[in-house]
Amino acid sequence: MAWTSCIILFLSVCVCGGRRLPDSEPAMHGGVQSPLYPQPYPPNLQQQWDLSVPEGYRITLTFTHLDIEATAGCFYDSLSVFYDKEVLGKFCGHENSADGHYPGNQPILSPGNRLSLVFQSDDNNPERRQNVGFSAQYQAIDIDECSDPDPEDGSGPLCSQICLNTLGSYLCSCHHGYELRSDQRGCVLSCSGGIFDEPEGHLFSPGYPDPLPHALSCQYFISVESGFTVALNFNDNFHIESVDTEQGTICPHHWLQVTVPDSEPWKLCGGKSPGLIVTSSNSVRLDFHTDGQGLSRGWSLDYSTHRVKCPFSGSVDHGRVTPDLSEYLYRDYIFVRCDQGYKLVTDGKEIDGFSTMCQNNGQWHLPLPECHIIDCGEPEALLNGGVNFLSGSQNQYLSVVQYHCHEPFYSLLGGMNVVFTCEADRSWRSNSDIVVSPACIPVCGQPTKLIAGFQRIIGGAEAPADTIPWQVLLRSGGRGGGMVIADRWIMTAAHNLMSNGKPVTNDAVQ
Ligand SMILES: [Ca+2]
Ligand SMILES: [Ca+2]
Picture (cartoon, rainbow, N blue to C red):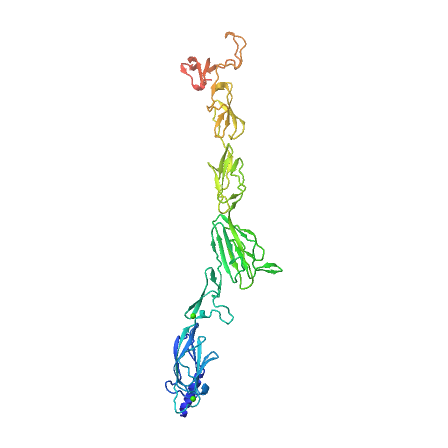
């Protein structure tokens, strides 16, 4: 008997530290029995069972049998059930005992997912009865968190709008137009952010103009066709919490940030509307942020889009740029025409016509051409004559030339001075509008000096030069007379071209 007590005492010391279920996977159900059950339990016991089920569940404990020495107040032997330090019940006796405290058939429900059982016995039991202890089953049951939506621990409503109970947990949900906050409990007005790609639009902070809910993070993207720029026009009723410092107003907690590509973002806050913000971009991002404190009444804006401007195109010498507008915008065309007598030239080449378009990057797609004066080419050469410039030079537009013949042996057909002008159609035209080329005709038999009186050859004198222009003296070994009969023909007697019975060579004729 002494050995038995010793072993039991040893065992009870071992289990006093708590026989805990494994931490890793809390069970969904299980059983607990007193030592040696269904044999009588030993004396001098102090044993604890710590039961746990997963978070989000409670434990129901149901006794299938309980038979512990019955005393008033369960003073000697007892089974106590705890939730943390709270005693949920202290039991002894059996179903029909007059003393003690029998748990009955009602299960014990834990407030949370833990439950502790402590069984103790004193050093003896009445001999007339051998008490066998207890046997109990436990299982996890879901907590319906939604049945108590407003806990009294001061943490506020579990779900600000809709609570959905789930096995082991719960979900909060929000009505249309609201979204769940990051705490997964509260609902805030939806940012209604998104992408705005229409040419015009209206944006405003959630709930505007009512004061804003807290802890917002809203993004708005305005993205329109390239070639357009976005302008933001803020409503006068603008209020975003700000802090005044010595360095000026800063936006540490609430702000609206406006970002366009390739430039520093603007951070807006304060009570004064920024009014009109004209950007140079077709895409604008707005980030609206509020933290969990402070007060902002919000903002509202209308945005509009405008075509990109191209720089003034400039002017062209001797030409005209049309249309003449005060500003040129994306998709506008301009045309260039040269003045009369000038031609369009670009990159050194003549072109038939010119237009250029203002592109979406604000640049003209082609640079302006130049107008160069036109050129009629060399005037046609005149046989036995020449051409002089009366005005202008280099055969350019409106240059004037005059033809002449080599006097006195040639004269212009018709005897008139023929003046030609370089016209806009790049041809030389006479002032009498004839296109026929001038010609020089030879002049025969027209003395430029007159001989005074008639003289006969006998005893005659040498004729002065230019008095008988159609008669020539031939030297071909001998001497003879000849007559000019055409531009390059002289008629003479045949013997004048013979010498010693043979024709003279051409070289010998002078
Ligand atoms: Ca006892
Ligand atoms: Ca639940």
